[in-house]
Image (cartoon, rainbow, N blue to C red; front, side, top):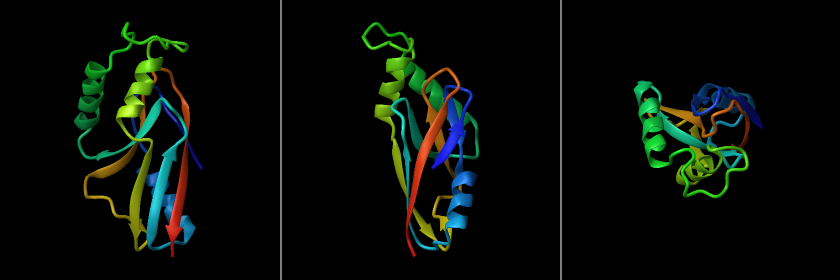
Length: 133
């Protein structure tokens, strides 16, 4: 289990933490599964070279799912509560990544991100499972 602290809404890279965990596992070839245990955050594999990509994604989602939209009845934790759930429903809560020779087979510019959908800082748990040999 990996616990990730964040500063609120945005994308947070954690590829290196996962790579260290894989290295310590002793498994060279297999399949990695990551699963975020929350309904208002998600996981993405996204470009890790140009930070404009993360900003553009956030601007797109801000336009697509607006905080405080009167469409939403659920607002127990504030105006970003239901929009956070919608954002998580539109993205992914789990990822599967092949592992070969002890390393994830990500592309040259790919990184793993926690996508926090709430405005307030959060601590998120990501379950990690690696099966192989």
